[in-house]
Length: 82
Ligand SMILES: [Zn+2]
Image (cartoon, rainbow, N blue to C red):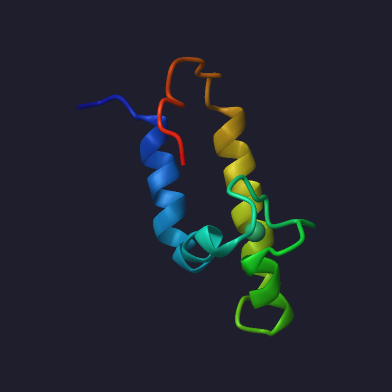
């Protein structure tokens, strides 16, 4: 296996920034960017000092880079209703 899959990078980000990704499900919006959304659990953690804002900045940067490298996938992946 010599191919570097983009999903591997995403997984790496999730592992490196576990404290961010673990908070994400608690956000009010599922597609929360943790920037300025109301009801954001990550922003709340930063506000109360349990999360380093530096980490959040770096996480966002990595995620953006990862997204920029990801080809747009369009397909029937939204079959599940929640
Ligand atoms: Zn959020």
